[in-house]
Structures are given as C-alpha cells and as structure tokens.
View (cartoon, rainbow, N blue to C red):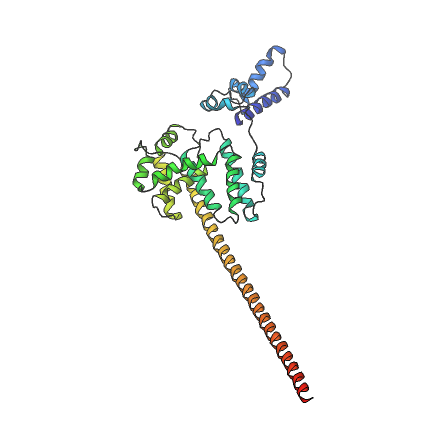
Amino acid sequence: MQIRNTAIAALCLATSVAAFAPATPAFTAKASTTSALQSSPVSSIDLEDVKKQVVYKAGAADTEFARRFGDRVGLPVKTVGEAFSEFTAMVGFSINALYKNMVTDLVGTLHLNVVNARFQRDAVWCVGIVSALELLFKNYPEPEIRDKIVESLFKCVGMDEAEVRAEAKTITDWAAGKSKAEVEAALAGEDPSSPLHSIVTTIKGDKYWLYSRYFGLGLLKVMETVGIEMDKDEAYPVMENWMSEKLGRSSVTACNDSDMYFRIKEKLEIMETMMKEIEIREKKRMAERLEEKAEAALRAAEREEQFQAEVVAEKEEKEAAATTTTTEA
C-alpha cells in the first residue's frame, strides 16, 4: 500500500511538473516529461513497478504469501459484531455485570485470532484457552450459565468445546510426571513420540505460523504441570528460553502475555478473597437474623405459655370462689 501511494504521488508530481513547464514543441514533450521525472525527488522509482501497483489485485502479488493465502480473497468473514451477536443469541441469559466486559473481550480476541488466515489450532493453544477460561470463570456465581457461556464462546468461532478439551488433554496428560528437561527436549524436537513434536515441526518449518495469546498461556500451563513455580519472575525466563531458544520464535509477546496472566490472576485472587469475605459476612448476617427470629419465637412462646397459665389460674380462682359461696349458703 505504501509503494502504491508513493507511485501515485510520483505520477501526480510528474504531471504537475509538466503542466507548469514552459510551452515546448510537440516533438519535445516526451523528452520534457522524462526530464521532469528524472529531476524530481522520486526519479529513482521504476515506472514498471508503478504500473504494477496501480493495477494491484488482492492475492495476485508475485510473493510466497500471496501464493499461499491468495485463495482466501473474497471469502466471507464475520465481523466481531456479528460474532458477538451469535454468541449472545446462543447464551440466552444475561451475563453477570462483573463479567460482561471480560466476556466481550474474550469473544472479540478469540474471533480475531480464528479468522486470521495464518491461524492454526494446535493442542498447546487448546490447553491455553481451556486453562484461561477455567481461571476467568472459576468464581462465576451461576454454574449453569457459566457452562453455557463457555460452550457458546467456542460455537461462535466455529469450534466444538469437547474437541478442544480433548486436544488439550493430550498435552496435560503427557506433561504430567514429566520434568522441565524432558519438556525442553520435546520443544527442541528431540522427542518424536511426544504430542509436542508435530507442533514444534510446524512452528519451525512455517515462517507464517501465527503466535497467539492462548499458545503462550498453554506453555504456562505446561510449566505449572511440570512443577515450575507459578511466579512472574520465575516463569518469565523460562518462557523466554522456550520461545526463542527451543522454538526459534520471538519471545517478546509471549513474555508480555505471561506477565499479563499473572497480573490478572492476582486481581482475580483478590476478587475471590473479597467475594469469600462478602459471602462470610452474608452468612453471618443470615445466622444473626435466624437467631433473632428464633429468640423472638421463643419469647412469644414463653408469653403464650405465661398467658395460658394466667388464664388457668384465673379460672381456678373463679371456680374456688364459686364453691365457697355455695358452701356458705
């Protein structure tokens, strides 16, 4: 796009230079135009490149990227708004106010990941999305609605929750009982029997492989499974090593995602503590109210008992007085 804009600017500049040049015989017009282009600041631009850019067609460029993904030109792609509308219709319930912004962000980021032509779902990514959702919705107040939100989240991006969880399980089951060194050997491509081998092969062999946040979170879950301390300062150098040294990819974004994960986790833990404190206070207040009701009922029962005793005593007193009057008579 930048080359195209530059090319158009070159043509405009050449035309303007020729327009304001002194009148010349017709046979020298071409020479004047050429001279104007050569003396202009963009004289180094190849006119053939200019023509190519002016008639540019999406996906038709003579590049490896265009040859690989050019067949996707013109395919219908849902907008984030359309994806969110589908999600809302699938859920069918009002989302808790504390979770609305988070859910909106989840739908948007997940949709943008999936519609990217370079996106490839793998088992590590599946581990990341599953563990992220478990962390974020851990304390959702209505379990049924929480399950419906997660199911709808996958459906609105064309995925099946059961399949994603099954893929994730292949990594977590494999990593259980493994050491950090064994995982690093697998990430280096030294263990053909591991479920990571095909993923590593794809990452190293495909220069257009797309990193996404949930892949990094999947690596964090693997770290946790093999016993690496889940602390920001401990995880950062491990993530840096795994991405750059083992997988041969930039570690900057993955390390930033790691830091973000621990920040969010800390905030969620604080929120969880606050919710538990609120729950304890509510239970205490409810117990106090029940105790007050019980005491009031007990007092009412005592008053009723006392009243009945007084009624009986008064009746007996009247009967005794009547018997005395009859005897005297």
